[in-house]
Image (cartoon, rainbow, N blue to C red; front, side, top):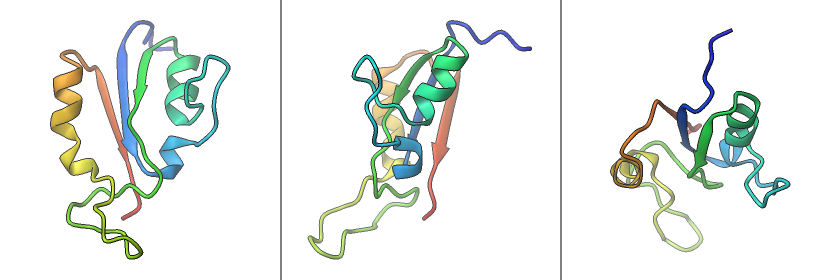
Length: 92
């Protein structure tokens, strides 16, 4: 098996990737925790329920912009100068 211990993995997506549950250490227990934890990787999850891959999508009820994965890439690069794996997930 490939040794991924210590590699950095960053996730961004919608509710499927987010998970919505809280893990033992207060971390989100979505896919980031499952994959990163199982493989001993340093992991981060920027996923948000209702997120979308494309930009210019707005919530019908409020008119506010949804979480746009395509516009979050620069933020991730600013926060993490070294990323080995970047995982995007979304249905829209």
